[in-house]
Amino acid sequence: MKAIATALVLAVVLAAPAAAKQKPPRDCHLPHGACELSLEEIQQLANTPPTITQTVREVTPAEAYGAADQPGAEVETANGMSIEEATGVAETPNMEVEDDGGGGGGEARTCQSSNLAAQYGGFPYDRTISDHTYWCWNSATWLLTYRSTWVTQYATICNPLGTYSYRWTGGVGQGIVGIEAGAYYTCPTPVPWWPIQFQDCLHDAYYAWGSNIAEFRCF
Image (tube, rainbow, N blue to C red):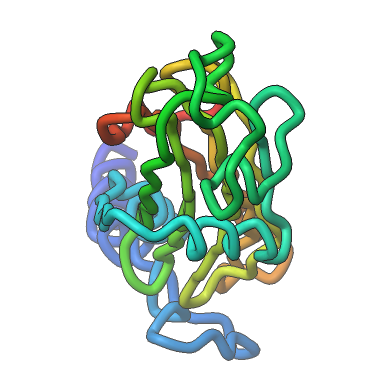
């Protein structure tokens, strides 16, 4: 009996490495070699820490004004001002007088744009969300007068399910506005009934003097 038990243990140990790497299902047709990956490998790839790229530039009031027409854009203006007034395309009634405390009057507008892209996961389970934000401020008071934000998403093998954005702190009429930008995905695996769901998001903040990334998590 002792010899039989030893043989069984040895057989299990020898079989373990082969079991760790599953064979691709016969009906798996996923691209980019995904059928060759185990569920554990897919989880590791899909949860690779995010990487960031960002481009910030100063823009004309006319370009900032046009950003309000982007599909799905979330637009804010100070004190009920029109978009033309908030971006500086048109002068406000009190453009030449003291500011009213909400960023509305005072001097001319200064506007910037930011394209902030965060890539989550490794190929082919990579997922990218991009926060596109335009914002303007009163050059005399450094208070925000305008913001337009929209979010786009991309994935290699995962299926995009939609994006969102919302303001989580500050806002126009103040010196800062914080945005959560996010996107939803469902990612297929070699096991047809075992897709992986993701909500990826980031928090970033925009000031009259620039912007920064706060953190990579969802509220």
